Length: 135
Image (cartoon, rainbow, N blue to C red; front, side):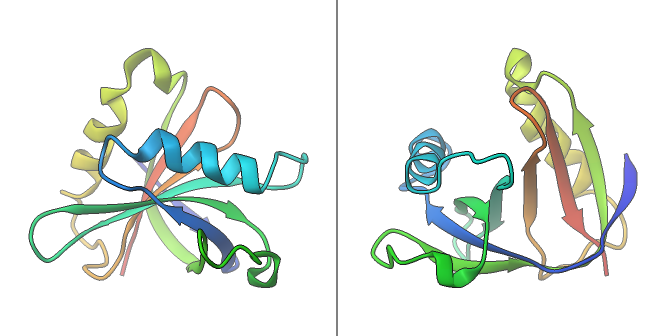
């Protein structure tokens, strides 16, 4: 685990998964269809727990909120600047359970923001950074 700093708020457009975890792949495919890779955009996953124990998940892409003109399938969100506790996983697809295990570990950390979220950042096609905001 390491502490990282997100220096600026990151506006994103996001697509809600129909279910968790089954709908995650389709949500990411939809985001990539609406906002194809252009060498500048960054892709994310954002999740948080619901009131009844369920998990809500969104696939997201960096960009100005005005970029989202498909209001029927996307909404806008801001990844907050600040300190995060984080785990970087290389070649995560070789062990997809490693993502859940990373978040389980991160959520046990003292000092996480109880109103925060779980953030996945995809720096390239094989790695993932799992993070949770700190107070």
